[in-house]
Image 1 (spheres, one colour):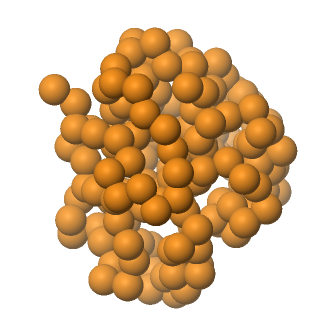
Image 2: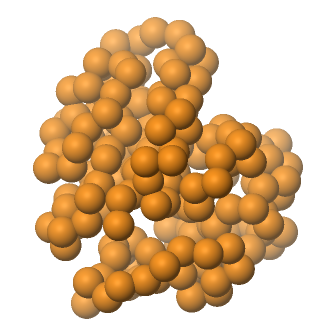
Length: 177
């Protein structure tokens, strides 16, 4: 199983100080690698990980401000252009990568870390039937979206599995034991 983890570019993995989304992605990447999963982490170039690291931006925007739109577009396109190399893309980058999900055949999972505004909900709704959603907590859900789960920790177990649209028990987000 080859998994691409798409991380935000605001803070490095694992974050030095603040970075709650980045901390989730970092813990997930390290746990998956420990399980023997082939993980490529798309994050900032200064990230510290046991996964393979791909980056388009060396330093995090939270520490070295730059044009966020340019950086984000380059980061997202970096994983989408390599989508055929992966069995699944796990998005932790918020709503913007969803707009690319219809252009690729690779299954796309988005962990919803919360909604910064109700104005982004239409993007999630548009891709609701095409992608998979998980939330970090039940309070970080929107009633108009379909969710696979609210996992305790998004970690793949050692059990084999396959990914297909419509699979209600997709174990990519099985609770770890």
